[in-house]
Length: 382
Length: 226
Image 1: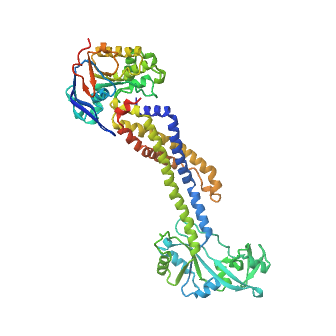
Image 2: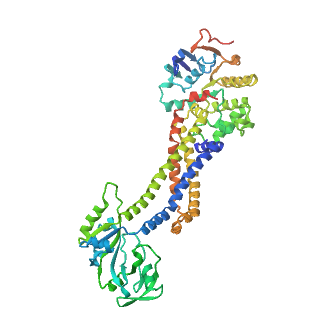
Image 3: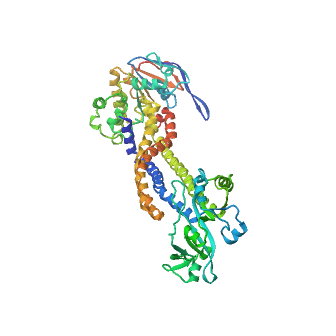
């Protein structure tokens, strides 16, 4: 009788033990498959969250009067618009900075002495594989802050005149409770025209790309790199935003880093215990194999072979269950990025390799103990 | 055929060292039927396992056909046991998930073709009157039938030596006598048999009855029962 046939018959005879092993391993495979299937959606959702947190780096002209900067919220100096292209062209820039967005901000007086801030943003230059964040305001249109719209008494679809040109109001923003309420958002070109500063910018907004360890000072590294790429500029880090981004990113990393070993540990202990119980139950059988002249490899093969067969079964079942859970519940969790959740059949192959391997590893100690059992002792018992 | 030379076996227990066999010398000739009798704990099962190459002696040598079986490598000894020695146990030790045929064929080496295995198994079951039970599970058999399945399994590879540890210990007197009749028939076929038992059934079939006490053979106990 072949080893395979013996394993299958024993497995069928002790269905309870086999079923519990398959359930445990299936659950672990399903969690793994479920996580992997939704990982793209999770990653995109995390990006969205961090994107919504906003830019955390402000690159401004070096000669900026910092007292005036913090008083007004923008630099009183400007630099040539080409600075953003030079920064983007620096070979190491996207290792430290990302999403470079040139902007020009300045005070502007509308009728009746209404002082507002005109804020124009240009096209974002993103690193390789990254998509630009936010959206671009079409030239010839403006978005009005809550207070500006209220003071001017204009609403969406109407026009206003700024710097001798007429602009269509594309949006009136809801009350933000910040200086956004007194801003007029435009394209960079329109802001340059309104503020009469053609080809100039006074800030490049960016996001840091650094994933530094706790013993490194990110700001020093950012400043060193900027000095080489753009000597006429200085960088400020919005620490609270940077920390919030880092916390969000680390939370996701830590979550997976903790969940994976925990699942493996619990599942491994479960399988190992069941295999151990199985070996104890089969003492007489192992004894008779010895009496019939079977060697250690044959006996270990029966235990490990069974573990591999259970692993294959759990791999298939776990893949099916994990995919179903991910496809069924994933879109309810990752509402913004649900389309990223798609069946992934490469995970089936992974499950069919990893689950039997893991199951065999978990059964290794019980198999070793089975080989070392004293056959004489086993055959003396009933 | 079988020869024990100054064989001893010590066990380490919590209460200290226990001497199960003490300087035991024994010779069993080819084709001889020997019964080893003694009270529980006298070392008779230990002796049987020693003869079968399953338990290393603490001292002395066990020779079968002039070969020191404990001088062999473990894999060689396993192969030797598979080819030359058959075991029968008091508790039968049949695998509950195999039918009668499966249990008998369990002894077959991997090299034996499926058809030959089945043929040999059917032949043995026929000889032992179990052919109609070939597809039954052990739990569907009587104790006597189970022991006959175990005998068939032990005979599958046509071993020269058959070792039986209390083969009638779990049987009623009628089934016990039936087992000894079968063993006697096997013996007449030319096999060497060593049976350990504490009962008195079967003496009439044996060439010799040896009494064991406290790990040693009782002097003048090796005469023919006749």
